[in-house]
Image (cartoon, rainbow, N blue to C red):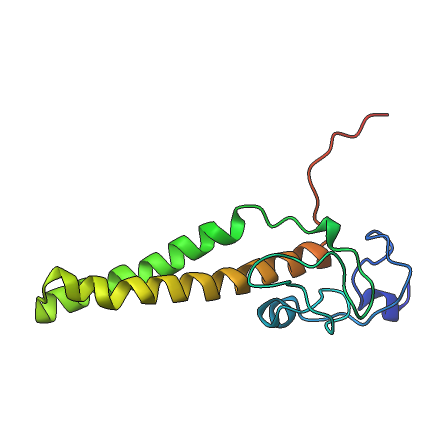
Length: 139
């Protein structure tokens, strides 16, 4: 195997016949771009996926992030928001309505933004590593 083939993802295993240079899965995931070419858009709206890439015609049928992005978002955003709530309560002891007024919009904003990023990153990593559902191999 030559060095040119070593630097690109396993495209034959993904069923890709076209050659595309490898893209950074974290960069294209955060930008919401195609995991193969890095140019087309991955999302149709806020969180729903497009059926295929407009630039390279990659079918996004393989993409199944499942509950992974939601778990990461709950843990990360929850840690940040609860930390801020505790800090505010200990230092200033405001009434409960101040917490609701400040942290309800912050939680919703952080959750939606980071859920899109996390979903894009996990789909790009899924494509790059040719991840799929586990199957039993029978001879």
